[in-house]
Image (cartoon, rainbow, N blue to C red):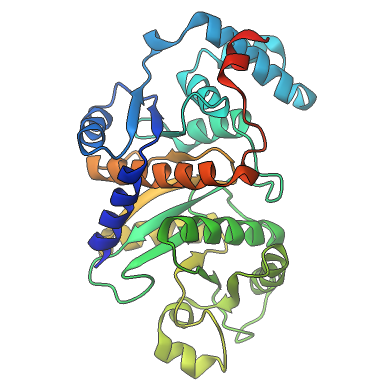
Length: 333
């Protein structure tokens, strides 16, 4: 069943393929994936090698980065230094609207990708937090949406506060709805279900539920829930009287990076699931980080997700808090 979901995501991407930049031309998996992406019309892929960097444009990007971050200690010298890194250059191309999305990370750590995204991309002011999510496609699975479940955060924030967990939940829920066109049902996970245990870890999750509901009142969010209470209707019926989420969750929010990272890797390896992502959340411009263990198919599917997110962004002017005109980016600095 999950294959049908992945196929639908690819089909959505093909209806309006966007320009996606790939700054890892040295990786054979990326090159093979780009061949498939181009031949199937999933995106308009743009490979960025070091020799493709334009010196004039690089100078403009450095000045723009300096202007955007000088109040955070950025110097013009440092900005020029960062623009020597083609991840930063690619991220600035995305920021300025020359491309519609970025997919990278097959040959670089999450830290490298996240640094370029946080420094260069436009952060969603309402959320104010950059985080990540995986779309887990699980074979022979009756849970989630036809075996597809969103896991967050599995790659960025080690020990999130209640407030950060709430923002992770809202970002992941919005991502899931944008991709799946289905209501997100968000479970804030814990080793406790609605007071079955106590402690600071439980309190953190419990507090995050109300914060998340305040951030987005029209989302289905519940917790604290143990994993079986979140996914299994029979267990949910035993442990809870009423919930819009318990027993039918399709978005799982883990209480720590330890739990999230271990959880997605367990699911990937033991259940032979496809882990698509990590998808970077919290930036206006769509960007995806790849696991260094990714396959060619993972790169193709991650690109399709990035294209669909770019399609949603182009339809919602409210997402475009800074939309640099291409001519302006070239000539007015």
